[in-house]
Every structure is written in structure tokens, then in C-alpha cells.
Image (cartoon, rainbow, N blue to C red; front, side):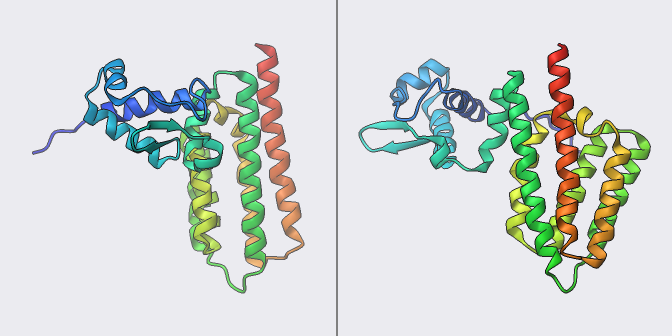
Length: 244
């Protein structure tokens, strides 16, 4: 009865993306004023309704502010933006090898700090629901057996999400989403993180075993394991960059 729909990005989304990129790359700096609406709409080849929709998206993201009679002014995104900007920042910087490596190192560090916080909370809990984490781990094992690297990457994030869910904290769980979305903008990263997927499986097997006993003294060891894996990932990326 229904045909499958293929939806291209809306014109408003494309407008917002163009202006967002100009802000995140520094082409438009904090304090700069955008052209008047009519001129900007003409320059971008859209009508003013479409442009206003795009500008509304950018205002909501903290990238610009509107002042009656003065038009739109660019904000300092580091002060006014939120973590949802991370994927866009990765997109505009990933073509520079040094910036790409720095971004990866920072994102992995953020994930590691989140893991440390979550494990510390789990260690203090009287009871932890393990079913979700076990099921997520089984999906990772299945993906590794198939050798599908995209499925492995998705299942890996699924295990992390399940462990964060086990803390019962919406703060921890929601903090993962922008980091995961930013890492997803770097599909080439998967070949470095999952070069030896069996080591990922073994690491999570140790982690699940710890979650059943939750000894606080085990937290530093688990975080150290994750840090070592992250260091190896960054080192492999740097090695390939130097070989190019």
C-alpha cells in the first residue's frame, strides 16, 4: 500500500549546516553579525521562511542570538553551545590528520571518565541488574563471530550503554549519546578500535565478572585496561598517519 520514502535533508537543515560550519571553523567569529535576513536568504538561494527556520535551529543550539533591531549575532559556541555540537565539530575538523587524532584522544578520554564515574557508582550499589549488560555482551559476541565491523561497533556502544543503564543514572546515560554520535562521525576509527575484537570481548567479560561482585578496588584496574586500549588505538592512528 505504501511506498518507501527517501528523505533528503531539508533546505532549512542545509542552511543551518552551512552557517554552523562557518561558525565552527572560525569563518564567522563570536561577535560577528550575520547579513540582514533578506540579503542572507538571497545569498543562500532560499526564501526567508526557510532561512528563519534555519536560524531558529542555530539559536536553539546556542550558536547565534537575535536582538530586536540588530539582527543576528554569532555567539561563542564554547560558552553557549552544548554537547550536541560535538558531531558537527568532528565533521569540520576530521580532514586534518592532527586535529582528527586530537579529537579521537579527547573523545576516548571523555568516555573513559564517564566509565570511571559509572563503575564507581556501581561499586557502591547494593544490587545491580545485570540482564541488560549480559544481553548486550552476547550481541557483541555474535557480531564478532560474524566479523561485521559496523555491527561490532554498534554492539560495543550497546554494551557501554547497558552498563550505564545499570547505574540507574539518566545523567551518565545521556552523557554517552553526544560522545558516541561524535565517534560515529569517524567510521575509519573502527578499524583501529576493533582491529582485534576478541580483546574487546575479553575486556567486557572481565568487566561483567566484576559487576557481579562490585569490589571497589577493582575500579582502577578496569579503568587502566580501558586506558591502555585507548592509547593503543591512538598510537595506531598516529602510526598510519606518519606512514601516509
